Length: 428
Image (cartoon, rainbow, N blue to C red; front, side):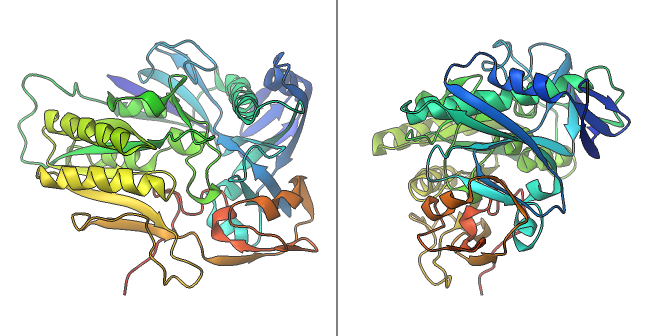
């Protein structure tokens, strides 16, 4: 089972009469993009589009999602299965990637846990999205619709726009093609090797209250942990529907480019044997937490895993799910490494996680989201800067003449728990 990702570098974006790629320049027909993003959704009353380029004095706020434009050119299924295309299983064939650009959804704030992207200045260093050419959709919706309808309208608009832009790369020869081959996980006679068997436990936020993630178009809150090919994740099977704190939110872009999966696949056969990916969820009730953790651990035992990497999304309640799963894996002799961010207070002296276990003895911290930062005014704001005072990490009075004094958690992806950024915390 093989997936090829054809990388098409995009180094500039310009408006044009037709959406196409010339060299490394993406030309976009603005009207067609707007029509595709809206596509008859009566909940959307208006869409505007802008381009934010690296190094420009631009602030995007509030940010709902970030999506990488891609197109399926060979093999089963289509892009963003279950939402934009059908529900055929993806993860094989060839997909072309417009690398270096993204679609960002913004506009009226859905939930208070959304974020911002600065394209220059001190805020830019905390998010990889500041280094992308961002096509920003500012979406207005009908007054009075539910927040869940609001979230869905923005989510689908962003996915449709990304799929539309991705089509421009369908017939373009990629500059580079990466080949990812996945062995059959449960084959009767696995390859003889002394390498440790390592599995990935991929926890998706699913607590409701606009904390949702979608697998093949289905909300994973009712999911029993399940096996998934890493190439399915690369091929758009997992989509963000979250309005969780911006710093550790897994946007759709993060799922498409999950660095844990990429690292495990790169090291497979060298110093470890990557035996499988188990998708699980973060739950609300103790009973559901116990059910999911038990089932996830059972799947890793079936895979014969010696070790596991466990990632999570969000903080507080999901800490309990992660620690419960980690503890049970360790009890069964499956050595586990856990990735998490911390909410340790402005001075770093508070308890940083809502739950812990002595068995979590290999923890990678990706930073303290309560760290305070000062963000200078930008020359241009795409969206509405006033919402910063209502966002998680901001507060009343934190905006003064365009300058923002807030916690790091307002920055999209700053402490992403997939290890997407370079920030980390080190114990003394």
